[in-house]
Length: 223
Ligand code: AP5
Image (cartoon, rainbow, N blue to C red):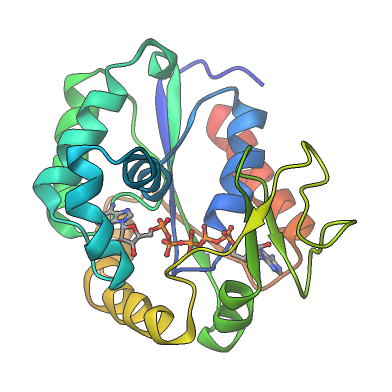
């Protein structure tokens, strides 16, 4: 599917809602890059950059990284040529200043109105999803030891990479991440609803059912 208007898709939702899982599928469907601020920062931590040294301990505590750092990172990423036809944000924006900052950037770069989807899931499902998550250390493929296990334990089906558990996926840090979501990010649903651009998807359904619902939203948006 090719996008006629330069458009940003934004996936909101609590930790473990399935933003990353669905963003990989839907970005492919739309032919736009998947921009995960969490992945960008984990990459900076793994490479030991100056940014990584600052954000690593913050992420490890399950707190939010400062708006200034996040906005600078996103602004630089959006200037890359692969974003010329649009992009899909996963885990960004996460605060009101980030949402307002993004509005200004999108306007400056000539994007149309964003399409925002809230992936809604009850808290009781999230802990199981997060503590069961394993991610491929090579290609980033996402698994779940309970609901989406690899064929061979600990090994990625696609590229044979080692599956690892994220450092912030412990029960204690998940609690902190959920609290940060409730306080800073949940209010964004009202922000985008008042702009008339919010869609809500029941993300407690199966991965394929959620993908189908998202595919319908994309189809309607692209006309
Ligand atoms: P980030 O990496 O963005 O993490 P998050 O928002 O906490 O979200 P997750 O990646 O944990 O969950 P997800 O919704 O992507 O779920 P997934 O698809 O993997 O952020 C990490 C940290 O970085 C933050 O805490 C903060 O410190 C910092 N940060 C990042 N962005 C920031 C920003 N903008 N501002 C400030 N700080 C920022 O799925 C989870 C599991 O569930 C998987 O195992 C999957 O297989 C399974 N699953 C998915 N869908 C389903 C389904 N439908 N049914 C059953 N299982 C499912």
